[in-house]
Length: 138
Figure: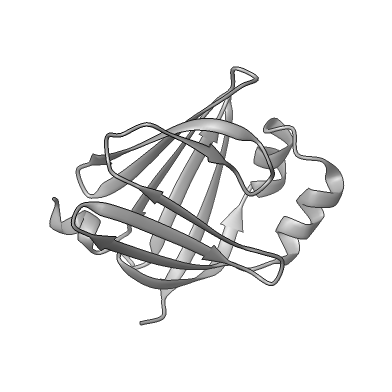
């Protein structure tokens, strides 16, 4: 396992995002849910034990945990309620999440620690890209 990916472990608070409204529109998320997402800041808790990873996303509205083994496809229900097939792969210093929706849409989220020591998530669905940044808490 890459040392760069190990740097993702820990607790992270969301500090910023970019183009999330357009990204969520591309996913088919309605206006009410988009407004709720825009107003909330997430805390991520990332752990790994014996090759099994867990990413817990906490917000005032809901807490959701995704558990996975890199390279193994699994069924997931996203925070906005979509059912997708997901596979997470280690790509260098990053975790790359690829989600295939029943509607045929593919979305990719690449999670890594950037040069400022922040966790950055670069997301792409169709032609729409969005980004989120988190600072380490612990």
